[in-house]
Length: 361
Image 1 (spheres, rainbow, N blue to C red):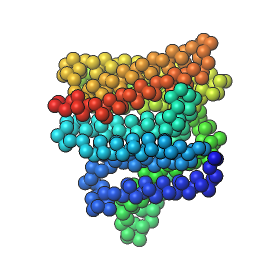
Image 2: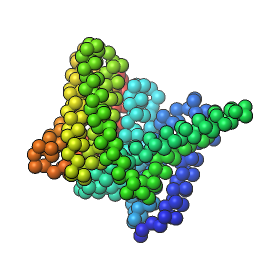
Image 3: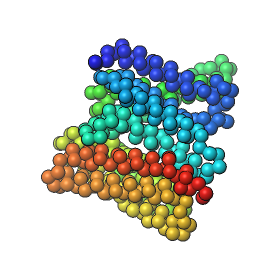
Image 4: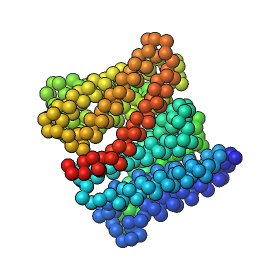
């Protein structure tokens, strides 16, 4: 049965109240946000639980079995991340906390696609949704920052310091609720939101490609090497992950527009430049492994870079054939969608196996 607009708003409000209550647990029990590890372990669980419940209850057909699977999964993850032994390697714990949101994102994707493993189109829709979510979320964050600055500025003008109260009770709750609210906007105004990703791709793809070329040139001129500089290697890896995400979201956002050859060529250039950086990063990681051996962090970075390298290779081949051969652009989308389970498997390995593989490191 199709959900009415009023019922969706009611579901949105109910889930927002639930998220607000859960995110306030440390304060309810007398712990300050600056002294509690609660958010490192549970913030992502709360946000993705809200998103999952919203998708479940606003679906055209409610599935009780999906609700049971979802609640069971979140209960298992909550117990697991909060009951991990304290004597586990601290680096491993950090990796678990970092990759738990990525694993939850993968599960949320399965739920978003109604656990349909065969329909690639649903995976593509999920990637497009994430692109819209990221862009609209960024706009909402900017608007929220402006509103916060104005609010605190007005109260400071009458000599009332509300910064601590505002950040703990309003800003924190608003950030947790924002993804669900943005999801509602995407569902309500699909024609508007689906036009944003192609626009962003056309603007930022060439800018990022040029920036990466200058970055490579500057790295050579300054003789800055990721082989011996750990912090520089970390920065490159974060850059690599961000650019890869931009490529993936841009491809799914523009593939339907067959006539935009300029955008497709720019995406190919961006992919090739990113591949060059990926090769440099991989060689630096392998060098550091040979010099200093395996650690949880190095193993994680190596695995992530290998996955990104494989993904970029496939995307580069498809984009080249789409630009200069007979392959349809939609094939690039399908390649991207088929690679998602590989990332999901890697996050599961890190979250559930790394604490035991590196328990004594």
